[in-house]
Amino acid sequence: MQRNPRVRNEAHLAFIRQLCCIVCGENTTVEAAHVRYSDARVAKVNAGVGAKPNDSFVLPLCGNHHRAQHQCGNERRFWNDLGMDPILYALALFEASGNHDQAVRIIQAAQFGGEARQRSY
Image 1 (cartoon, helix red, strand yellow):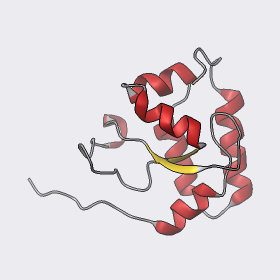
Image 2 (cartoon, one colour):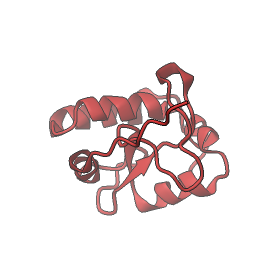
Image 3 (cartoon, rainbow, N blue to C red):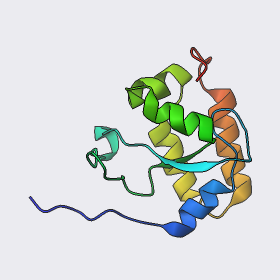
Image 4 (tube, one colour):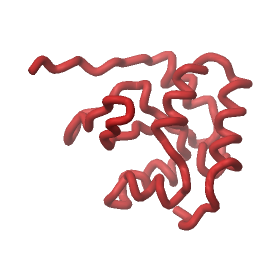
């Protein structure tokens, strides 16, 4: 089986870092956080230990939420507890890359359109 190389997009990562945290709205310590788990809906496979996924699977998270994403022990549960579909929002932000107004609307939909937050990370 041939391995596909990681798709990198530095311009998109820089764009993501200009947005507010998709979880809490904080906008001073935003980092580009890669969603690592596999998702068959979009043929996304886990890149493996020490390898980052494609830059199309990245979300804006403040430093606190980025650390919580990795420290919780189960990234899928982290997002489920927040009532968010990170794959949907990452791909939507990738499609909107460069369009700040559209990205803000996507983030607002994630923050206010999802289920009630069950756990505060």
